[in-house]
Structure formats: C-alpha cells, structure tokens
Amino acid sequence: MITFSAVSKVYPDGTSAVDGLSLTVEAGTVTVFVGPSGCGKTTAMRMINRMTEPTEGTLSVNGADTAEADRTQLRRGIGYVMQHAGLLPHRSVLDNVATVLRLTGESRKAARRIAYDMLARVGLEESLAARYPSQLSGGQQQRVGVARALASDPPILLMDEPFSAVDPLVRQDLQQELLRLQAQLRKTIVFVTHDIEEALLLGDKIAVFGPGGVLQQHDSPEQVLTAPANDFVSRFVGRERGIRSLAFASAAGVPITPASGAGRGRVALQRGWALIVDAEGRPETWEDSSQVRTPVTAALSEDGSLRAAVDAVLSSPAHMAPVTDRSGRLIGAAEGTDVFAALAGHARS
Ligand code: ADP
Image (cartoon, rainbow, N blue to C red):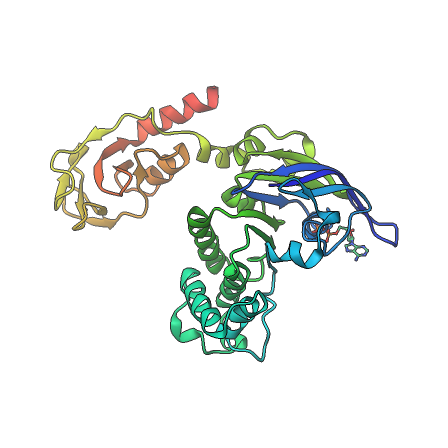
C-alpha cells in the first residue's frame, strides 16, 4: 500500500508541480495517474521511490515513512519502467535483465535462468535474448523493460508512460499483456499516462490530475466515466463518455434465444440465419438463407457489457449478436431490437 498525505512539490524554480496530494494506492491494484501534460503525474510518481523529494507532506509504503527509509533499500522493492525502455545499448537483452539480479546478489547462473524466465513471461522468444536492444522493435524493447523491472520480483511497479512511444496496435498488445501479467502477479502498480482510454482499460482506480498538480478525482473507471467530479474531468474524459460508459453496463437483461445443437457444425438461428462454429464451438461464420457467408468479427459473452452487445449487433449481417458462454462457445443469439431496447432502458435509468 502506498499513501500520499498532503504531499506537495515545488521545484527550486518555483514551479508548483504537485499540490496537496492525498491518495492511497491499495496493495495488489493498478492505479493510473492520468491528466494532460504538465499536471504533475510524473513528479507525483517519482516521489514514491524518492527520485524526487516532496517539499511538503509525507509518503509511506506499507505504513513506513519513505523519508526515513534507506533509498537503496526502498528502490529494491520498487520496479521502474519508463517510456523509452532505457536499456543498456552494449549489453544483450538477457544481460540487461540479468544485471538487475546480479545487483541483488544472485549468482550469474541463477540470474541468467531468472532472466530467461522473465523474458518468456513478457512474451519474448528465447532467440531474442542474445540480441542487442537496437536489434529489437520498440514494442519488444518495452517488453524487455517490463521484464527487467519485474526480474527481482518487487512488490511495487512504477510505469511512466511505458507504452506511449509505440504504434497503436503494438500498444494494444502491450496493454493486454500487462493485464494478463497483473492477473497472475498482483503487483501494486502506479501507471502514468495522458491517454484516458488507456487509463480506463488498465486502472482499478484512476487519479485524474489537473492544472497546478491538483488531484481532481480519484475513483473507479466507471465512476470517472459516469460521475465526473467536475467540468475539468468531464472535458478530459471527453465526448465519447456516454458510449464508453456502456462498457460498464451489463447486458444480462437482454433476452437470448438459445440455439439447439449449439457447439457443433452449423447452428440454425432465428430468421433463416445460421452460424458455423469451429471445433471448440466458437462462432466463426454467419450464413444467410442463400448460404452467403460472412465472418463473425464480434460476439457477446453471457456476462458481457451493453457496449459489447451493441458492437456485436452492428458488426453482424444478421442484426443479431452471437452469444457465447465464458469460454467462447456459442449458446444462442440476441436480436438487435432487444439490444437496442436494453440500451434505451439504460439511457432512461
Ligand atoms: P506530467 O507528468 O503530468 O506531464 P510533470 O510532473 O512532468 O507533469 O511536471 C509538472 C510540472 O513541473 C510541469 O510544469 C513541469 O514543467 C515542471 N517540472 C517537472 N520537472 C521539473 C524540474 N526538474 N524542474 C522544474 N520544473 C519541473
């Protein structure tokens, strides 16, 4: 657990970067510091491992005041990932990760073994371990950066705009990879970004920073979307707030027409439509009454959101959503008219 108590930072030139920040980051959760550039997010984060010292207030990690901690000791428990991976250019990928472990006293052999493990964990092939950082793509370098930060198994991870220098598709991969890793590792993560979409995806909690380093709202993504604390947050969250909030509205009330024989071959649905499913029973292809086929690009899981339901209907030539169980097996279909009725009900509530 990380606690900021009335923390302020005024730089020597008089810039007030963070102003009276009080906030708790619960252990094992992801908190995203988000806001426009220059609002003090990075400064706030860097005070956690004392790369920057506060001018007022106190910070504690698991109840212990960081100002009283030994700085090296403190940093040992805190991994750090930055925007450009910051890898050592003249060391191999493997050595970049293993070096951290050597510093914490692991033998050369153990360090290499753990480093290989960490590279696999972040989705990098073993064959890349011998390369130098410049021989990797930007996305791969960021993965190495994450592997290095996690190598010594620190309970806390600080991530400073780690995915903002890579292209959008790679960025999406890295985001999904982080969610997958976090589901296994349950680190206490503070993640800085200026991208609200990224914040909504990754955060258990979101802290929205405003001008002068003043915290505007600290809440769940759903609350930030559906109940912005003030005009600043509302403007920052932006025009698509209504659409995005549908991701938090359950589609559980939408009627589903169960498909008999679902999970095998060709499954007949309403209005002459059928779905072809794969060997695992996952919907693959739409087929109309004249056997014209169209690939399925979106489906609704039985515990899915209204946003997923709308997306599945609008992506389907049949104007209905294929509905699957949690493992992706087809169980039936929901009619577009029913999804839009649920949407109207949600808008009224
Ligand atoms: P963000 O991460 O939200 O972009 P920063 O924490 O980097 O914001 O910066 C907050 C404010 O502090 C900005 O006005 C920035 O120019 C200023 N600042 C950051 N670092 C320093 C520094 N070392 N000296 C003086 N001002 C700084």
